[in-house]
Every structure is written in structure tokens, then in C-alpha cells.
Image 1 (spheres, rainbow, N blue to C red):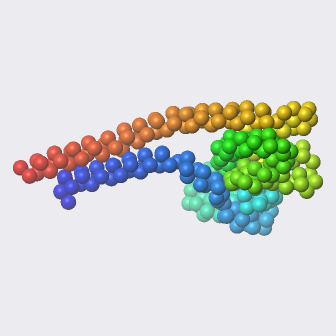
Image 2 (cartoon, rainbow, N blue to C red; image 1 turned 90 degrees about the horizontal axis):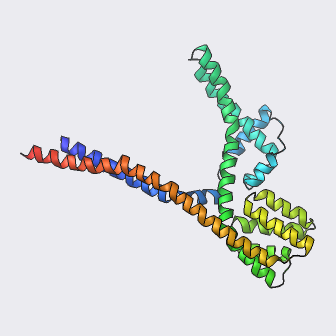
Image 3 (cartoon, rainbow, N blue to C red; image 1 turned 45 degrees about the vertical axis):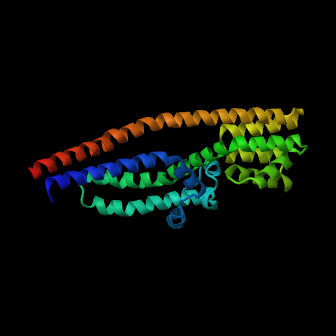
Length: 281
């Protein structure tokens, strides 16, 4: 291969890498939404089976809240979560022991202690990421859901009936939670308890404010429709602000991709043309 061809190949590779980086920045939000609507983690079931055999610690009190915020992936219970954490630690200990045999004593001890501890915390990280993606979806759906609830309440429906109707006529994470809440109320669960469960499963600020408005209306007889309209307006304003903040954070990333990849690629193309011209003389 001639020097000009080599430089041209490097230029093309840089240009392709830059284009892929730009596309990745543009489609990051959509990929997060898809990942949130299709939660991953089937491997946790296998780790939980291992953890039950080796013995899992007792679940902390907040484990149920963590799972609720993440949407109860794989219908996990707090005991399943702790078993998966114990299984991850046990699975990490085996390669750590194998690698530690070829290391000096001090790094070997650090590796044997650090690998299981890090693996024990990995399911928690997975749950936090899942809860964050789910919260983003709920925030995106909240303004339209609030508008539909307002229309249903203005039509004369009770708050529980409005939750059921909106939940049945919409799709999405928040609509599914509204259907679940309405179903609990129909089965005899006190409305206050069902709403508190909704707040625990959707811990975002908007859902907490919606629950507070419904409870205030039930307690004091205040009109619910104007509160829902104000909440919808506020939710849209917050959503617009989050989009502006996201766009502001994406700008430097795009500039960095252009500076590090596209500009060197263009310069390499120019250099390839100059080298080819010199070779032809």
C-alpha cells in the first residue's frame, strides 16, 4: 500500500468514527427510552439461583422501595435481589482467586476483597439506572396524562374512575401504574394507601404532586380540575427546561467529536491528496 493510500484509509476511518459519534449523540435519548421499556437483566435470575445456594444476607428495609422505583423487574422480591447480589459476589470470587494466584500477596488480597464487593453492588447500579430511565419516561408522559385526567374529572368522573379510564385508554409506564392503582381501589384497598403505593412506584416530583392534589381534593373538597391543569402546565415547563439542559450538554460533546475525529479526518484527506500529488511527480 502506498503512503497516500494509507493516509486516505486513516482519513476515512476518522470520518466514519466521527459520523458514528454524532449519530450516537443524536440517538442517545431514544435508545434510553427503548432500554427502559424493555428492561434487561435476565442474568439476575441465574445469579439469584447461585446466591440462594451460597446464602444471601437479609434485605434492607429500602430494598422494596428500590424495586418499586425500578418497576419490579422480573417480578423480583427483596429476597431475590439479595440472592442475586450474593450470587454476583460468588461468581466474581472464582476468577478473582484464579488471578490472585499469579499476583504478589498485597495485590492478591486487594483483588480477592474488591472483586466480590464490586460485584455485590452491581445489581444496585442496574436498579438505579433502570429507575432513572423509568422516571424519564414517566416525566415525558405526565403532561398528557394530567390533561386527560382533568378532562375526565370535568366530565364528572370520580378521581378513582378517572385514573382507571385514563389508564385504560393510554399506553406507557405511567398509564400502566394508573391502571394498577385503580384496580387496587376497586379491590377494596383504601384510596389513600393505593395513591401512596403509586407515589412509591413513581417517585418523581410530578406524580407526588398529583397524589397530593387528589388527596387534598378528597380531604377538603377542593376542585381538582384547576389543580390538574396547573400541574400539566408546570410539567410541560419542566419538560421543556430539561430538554434545553440536555441540548446544552449535547453541544460540547458534538464539538468534541468534531474536533477529535472529523477535523483530523479532513486534514488526513488533504494530506493524502498532497502525498498522492507528490508521488505522481
